[in-house]
Length: 125
Figure 1 (cartoon, rainbow, N blue to C red):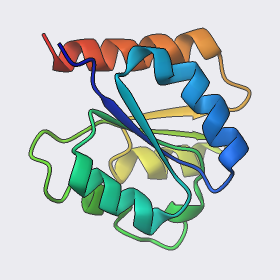
Figure 2 (cartoon, rainbow, N blue to C red):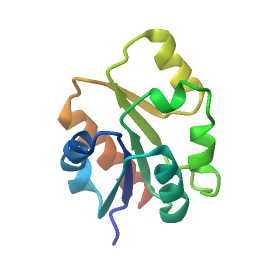
Figure 3 (cartoon, rainbow, N blue to C red):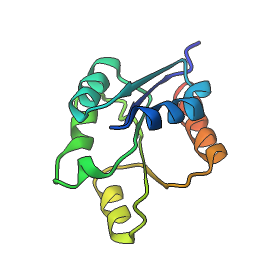
Figure 4 (cartoon, helix red, strand yellow):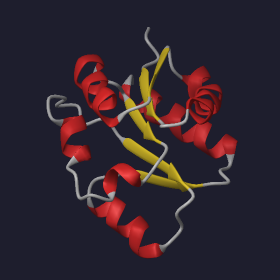
């Protein structure tokens, strides 16, 4: 049985690699993307079970990133954002635009790994 697919967006390949190590064991496949365009195309092609975005920058221009990611996928993959930003208004804005979970750095590795594992387990029950 497949354990799911995760798409990770990070403009920093080192950070994407660290995140892959954190959540990679809970998924059968992890795809890392370094641009928003690549992330959207990968999500539309791969239909991931979870999307992790390691930046709030793509949300600052009012783009419809969440809608683009979920455009063709009727399963509505959960989207997690991990960032340094801790301002309440930014976090609330992200949640209002459709982000399912927001984590701030420094993150609790075990908590993120467990959340991802539970998300994938829930999708394959």
